[in-house]
Amino acid sequence: MDDDFNFDKFPEDWDIDDENHYRYYKKCYPYVKDSKDFDNIIQKSILFYIFGIGSILYFIILSIILVKHRHHYIFKRQGRAFFISYIVGSIICSFNSFMVQVYYKKYPCIIHNIFLSMGYSLSLLSYCLIILTNFKNYYNSQTAYIEIFQSTRRKKEKGRKYLFSYIYKNMPQTKITPIFIYYLIIKWLIVYVSYFFNDGISQIGFCRMSKIHIPQIMEIFLFVFLFLPLALSEVLKFDDTFKMKNKLIISILITMICIVGYMTMSGLKQINCSIVVKYVPSDSFVIALFTVSSMFICIPMIIDILHIEKKKAETKATKNGMLKMLEDNVLLREFSEFCRKENCTENILFYQKYWKFRRLFDGVQEKNSKIIKSNFYGVNNTSTMLPISNNFDFEDHYHTSSMISFEGPIDATTSMIDENFNINIINGTDTMQNDYDTSKKNNIEIGRKITKNEILLKKANDIMEDFILDDGKFEVNIGDKVRRNIIINLKDIKNNDLDQHDFREKLKCLFDDAYKEVINSLFFNSYTNYILSKKSIKI
Picture 1 (cartoon, one colour):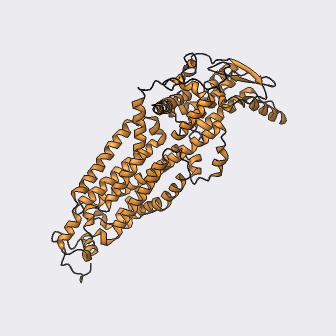
Picture 2: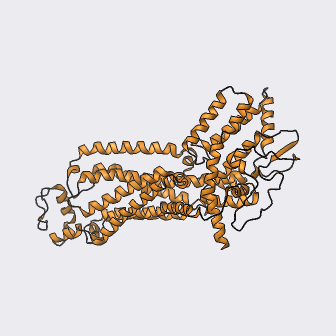
Picture 3: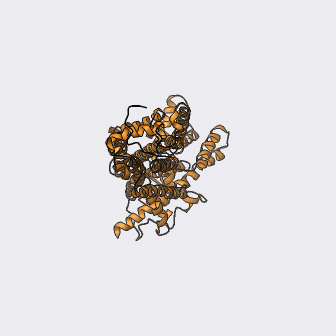
């Protein structure tokens, strides 16, 4: 404390021996006229009260809605753990920012610092992971779309260099979540230990920044000056089919503006010690950051969930209609374009790969021929446009029941065609003979005949690696129990000495439960929305 410093404006109810009081007084002394100005600066206006309380209530309502729909497919796909962490962190940060401004002279610094270390880590890191999850879902959906149609977009997409491509391909939520949790635990332990080396932590009121805030400051700087610019650069590479593109761009820009506003208000004494902070304190930018950003990353998801739940009862779409449409080349392309925007194309690809795999068990391999099996239409030409009903549903009243329940045998109607005929990839059967012939040729070259069982096991393993495992490039959203059962059952099939009939039956039904979940998800969360969008266009 400087003994020669002028204390003529020092408020009477402040403690002149308190270091925090003294530091605040010294900082703002050149910008106030008398002691009353200090109270005017510290006391907040009714507008800030309304804004702060309103934002906290908004987050509470938002969290209730998210918890209510915690089992919804969209919520789980977008990263349920990340959203919950983000909302919890936002509530902590907003509450802490509000309280430290309203009760600036008597808010315990230990509570302020605990909330500070918890809230920013939870919210900012979760915010990053939510953005990356949106990017990953879009990237995987585009990859699946190209896989379905062997699109000319393949070269264009391969030419693009994505900054976070390693995360898209190698970091599923099941790997990221533990890393996220371990980081939070280690960081909080470091902050907790540092409290014992700082005397200011036990102060009441006039809480200020110190060395113990270095971890939080580093997080914020990395978030603002490294991650956000990279994320903005990445999202601009995505085309306009990315549904969340504009929302994420706005959210990122507003986040950057709010953080710059907070730093400006906190760092410039001329502003921080003026009457402006009575109405717009620095922490109002923190509250605004989480409130506004949540409107662009949480509200759109909630609107989609509520919209789907509301419209389920109104649409006359049927699963049979959807399954029939998935077998029609023209209609499938239109629906896939819709799914590409909704980030659900991998479900369509799984549907195709699943039936391609099932058909292998009923296929008859003959020289110079290929076999097409249709589970719906016999030998009908599926490339013909099907009539669309008034409800825009593609209903088939006579087929597909066995596809959903598996109670009946798969239709084995076959059509023999010339080997040179170019079978469309949509039917998922054009490579079946080639796979067999290639495998056979390769194994003859190394002096061993390959068995049909080995081909079936390889195909099953490919599906599991691409769609079922957590790090699969087309990972579908299925229950953990179903996922575990598939992995365990395939391992048992490989390791146990089964007779031919049991081997074929167990392997044939390996992905049935996953298929049911994927079809339900595709129907309730994508197809019904697609039908409703077709209706609205007609109206």
